[in-house]
Image (tube, rainbow, N blue to C red; front, side, top):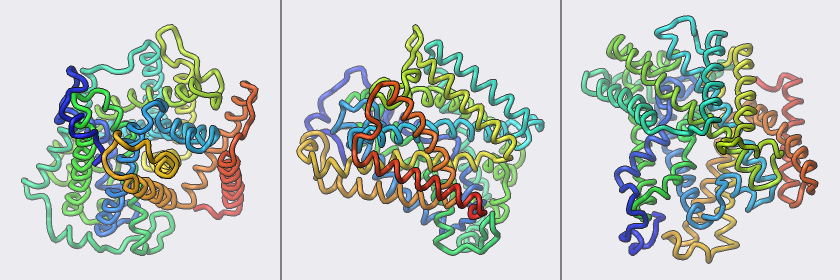
Amino acid sequence: MPAQTPSAAKTPDNSQGIGLFHLVTSVITLIIGAGVFSLCGDMAARGADGQAIITAWSISGVGVLCLVLTFFALSRIKPNLKGGIYSYASEGFGQFVGFCSAWGYWISAILCTVSFSALLFSALAYFFPVFGAGNNLPSIIGASIIVWFYVLVVSRGVTEAAALNAVITISKLVPLFVALVAIIFLGKFNPDVFVANLSAITVNPDTGATLSGIDKVTAALTTTMWVFIGIEGAVAISGRAKFSGDVGKATIIAFFCVLAIYLMVSLLSLGVLPLEDLAALENPPMAQLMQAAVGDWGAILINIGVAMSLIGAMLGYTVLTAESPFEAAQQSACFPRIFAKANEKGAPVATLVISAAVVEAFLIIMMFSDNTYQFFYVISAGMILPPYLLSAAYLVKLTFTESGSFAGKVNGSVPLYRILGIVGVAYSLLLCFATGATGLAIMSFLYAPGIAVYIWSKKEHGEKLLSSVSDKVVLAIILVALVVSIFLAATGGLS
């Protein structure tokens, strides 16, 4: 387990900091988002049966743990790299690669906001049917009001409020645990249904073809990654710890607690309804599951919890979508100068407005394309995978080029961290594959505009476009993927 030396763990680093228990709860709150409320239906809807769901969680348990430890190790070995995911990619593989990492992270956060809005208004539709599936005109108007209101709030320098964070935490965790307790102790879990769901025959929801075992697992993998988005922020609380040695412990404990919660939600739901009924649940699936299990009060509780959680999450992502390109623009010339502009209160007002405008564009696309929460979160998860992959690859590179930098900063041998990084890279590649041809094509379409932004920035700063071999390779990969995707789309090769 990566942590400081035993002597460091016993010496207070911050007398005003927080202890192990509160560190664990902080990380759990940070990782668990509204996606947990859709787990019970999303995997089934994509064609996964019970065995595939268990297998997918096993794979993601190992893969995500390696990514968590990767970010933890990098935060200790390279504390001077303040830009996080952008800095790791840029320092390790060149400025254009770093830009692509920052760009992917930014677009992923924007798509998170879009998917959150769809789920929020589908939850509110339980009380106000006018919102439908969360992607119609009233929903888009409501989401737009929230998005631009939060731009105003954050531009005034208000980035967080302790009282609001407490309400968000309670609104997420209390309904979740009530649902789990109700299913267990009210006798709503049926072992016969669970066993039948373990090996049910399922089909591809798009083509109707019967899915193989591998197809079922890949169908579930993207959802498991989606609910772990934000893991890179788990180490951000390290500066608030009373004992530095507690940070590694808190990260590991919190990860396994979150994994246990996700497993309980996924597996218990398999004993409530047949797989085909789980697949047919509308958003948010857990609300309809609870309605089937305990009645209207269960649906009301979950829908309120989902709405409260997402209203808070959209504020958090308003900050995130602004900070990512803002920090990258301040640290280098890979983003145009406009992204580095701040107002008199230090708020990144330009990136706030640009990000909100892009969110607005995707909201309009969602309305006219009739895509829902699930579509946007799959693409969001896909966009964040290259930044994760590059961070893990940077850790692997450090184990070969700067092996001495590990001494005294993390416990464990250098080969151990090399293995962690390699597994993180392999897991990220596997998840990219799991998004499918359509997902990869959309990702290439979303990464491609970044090239124009990068060229704009470099010309603005009078700098060379591609300064390293890795920069040229990554540019070539993006362009080839774009051409192939355009060809497949034009010839009907994408479903």
